[in-house]
Amino acid sequence: MGENNYSINLRDLSIYESLLFPDSFKEYSEMAEFLLRKKSMFILEDNLIELYREEPEVKDLMELGNIPIGAITAAFPNRFVREAIHPKTGGEEDEGVWGWMDLWSDYIITQHDELYDLFFTYKLRQTDLMELDNILIFFLENNSGDNKTQFIRFLKLTLRKHSKKLLQPEQIDTINEWITEQEKEPALSGTIEPKIKGRIKRERDDKVTLLNQEQTALLIYCLRKTKVILIDEFLNNKEAGVAFSILTGYSADTIRQNLSKTELHKTATAKNVEMVEKALKEVLKYIEKQVKPEE
Image 1 (cartoon, helix red, strand yellow):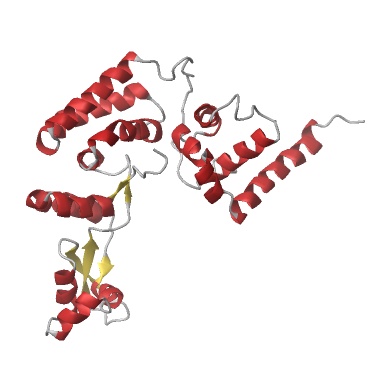
Image 2 (cartoon, one colour):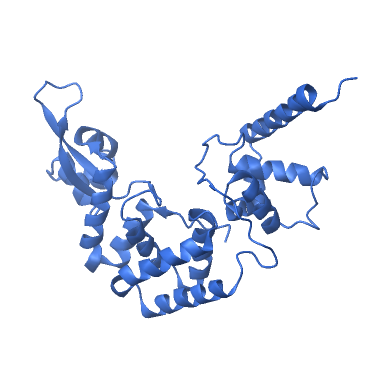
């Protein structure tokens, strides 16, 4: 599961929908356009031409007599949508240029975005049946503060709203089976779910704690190796993820993924090592000034 990226990326959604569901792509694209308009995500035509005019397919079409923007939209069908006229950069006061929305924008759709439930359903329908359990666990642990009841309610309402139109019967059955299994089990097998008032929703580099998710995983690794906390033999990655999720507000599953050997190799960057060292120095400074008893 750690090798997969289950986030809802608009770029991936648009590419998959255009390739796998061409008959319904227009309806999907209208929803994607709505999202981009609400986010004011557009690129001015002059800038768009500058970015893509050297693409081989675009150059070929221009050599056949197509204007630059026509060549771009022909070379990248189902991608660019004209938005509105905007003031031209460096132009006269009344001079305008079209803005264009890129349906392949590298944008992660979150619960804070409008139509989240719809794009969530599109993500589910693009997921292989064998991966559905994993992706549901991912969203349970990452998008709902580990609140199982809240996520299952969201999932049931989303199915009721969109499943008949967008999902296959076998996908609906699989999701309902997963819901049934989750409702049978406690939040964490063998443990009592902690009741935390006001659990926050963490964002990348939000600085609520000194370390980001990757740096937190690196700190856990160091604490294990120095026996400040239990070593791997007595504390697996999942358990460490749950413990530090409670302490930091980060997703338990994301911490677990970052603790894997392959991810650790990527995590131990010069910047992350520097930040962990800085955090530990802050702890030592606090001990020296506030905790250490006077002699």
